[in-house]
Image 1 (cartoon, rainbow, N blue to C red):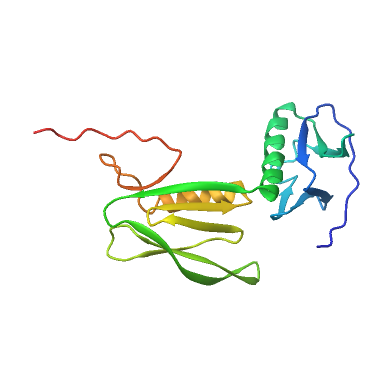
Image 2 (image 1 turned 180 degrees about the vertical axis):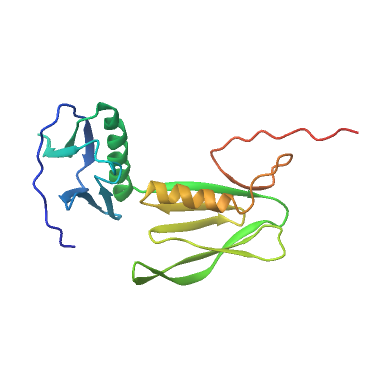
Length: 207
């Protein structure tokens, strides 16, 4: 991948420091930060969160003395944005170096999931091959879900699935879209739910 680097200019008062693994390479080019790591590539547009032009952001990259981490100083005209930018940068670095995992559990008699094949998907003018999940959720038909580019699934059992990806937002949206196929019931633990969520069920009528 060939990326032309920009010169980084610092003219702002506030700063925040993010430690980045040595295995992650960060390039500033075209108004974006490009993160390259052992698991893949990710991009963050510095102006995406600033459509009105109210805030400006400058970045300064330096390697500390022990050569094990890179320190990023986020310079902003708005101090309130620092935590947001720092959180995004940390998420990008973690994604390309270690990746994110989301676990889903399926409850219900006959409810199950399986990887049934692969599908060709067209996106941004090119094709890619990705996994196709098939869910049996008590409907008259099976439901197929094709994973987006960059996401993978591991079916640990017929009622347990693990989603993996380097983009945290993409993975979270995918998990919630799968959960929406059969939301947990109000009275019984029946449907798809995140392994981390705690549900409160209503008490049914007693005879």
